[in-house]
Image 1: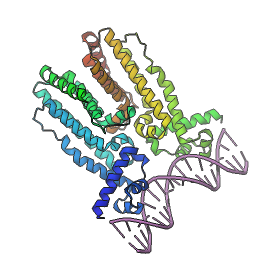
Image 2 (image 1 turned 180 degrees about the vertical axis):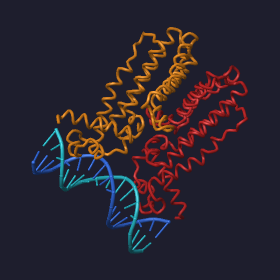
Image 3 (image 1 turned 60 degrees about the vertical axis):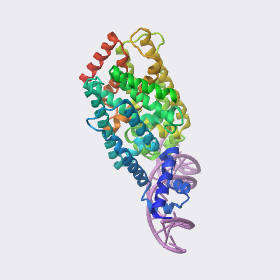
Image 4 (image 1 turned 90 degrees about the vertical axis):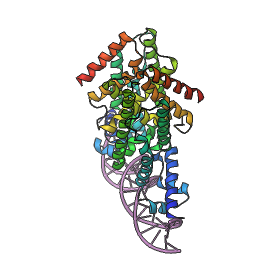
Length: 213
Length: 213
DNA sequence: GTCTATATCTAGATAGAC
DNA sequence: GTCTATCTAGATATAGAC
């Protein structure tokens, strides 16, 4: 098998096991076994288990990056925001092991710690930019202090929704309905600060999706 | 040394190390070493490392229990609610290792998984009771669906604030100011649904604490 | 109750043949 | 590139002397 193929096989197998069983509960032997290769072969392709985690995180980052690049001056529609949130939750769901054991992973792997902090900061900036856009066209009325706290609350929700949902059911974000619930709760924090015309749009949108699921 | 004393020493040493370094990064030898006792002695008092974790969790539960018992019919003041939140955040801060590695611990220790789910449900019920009290005396205006989502957002914040705060600074809830920020953010989610008289109280209260810290 | 010494086990990682 | 065999380290846990 080509070098690249085996490497990809190891990565996809690892991702599946990490997501299903939790990264701490998956050994390199376990991965090799599941991928039907030898442990030695695994270590030919990766220097360590952490190396696999880091590579997976890099893939995640690459796909996540565009989602944090929010155009500065563009006022966005409710639908766009929903779609944006949908994409990020879906992606995070595909790499949910990262969010389930965040503290463990960041305390063990300094590179990941730095990168994750950077990611969170970009998400924060993106959130601020989005809110500012809504403010500029009069859709959102909020003072700076409230805005600051709102951003924290949003960030907290989009970071820890996955482990939170895990506590109550074993699903996480695998099926669509759980995602809808996550998005609705994030938007719900925004709605009280929206002004009538936009506000009604957001409420209607949320109602729509919630009744469908 | 009396049996009880050594047991307590092991527990307090474990709690300190778990909180500081993260439970997965602390071995039983590490604990014994730090407590200045032999590994054998540690295993005389506890059957396993998980046993230590479980005992710590029980202590946490015992102290947390009263905080989830909210009187049904009593309308509470803003100050009371602040104080209530202060107590729970402070206690969680003292046992923060539980909240930093929640998924890991619950996936490994079924007893803890069940107990933690139960705890979360009691917290949810307590939150609902509190909101209902505010509704009954007209201070809070919110429809059932909004209420449901608000409760989720509050629960998420009071469960994951600790690891969230950890990402940005290394403090967590050790010092008081971090706690004030946590409480303010929880109350901030509530404020938009409050009616003028009560609403003003909550805002003033939050301002007060935030400017002090 | 406490210690020292040691057993057991598993995960991560390497060496060398093919 | 891949395998088999093996090493190492460290963590959990036990045995038996004191």
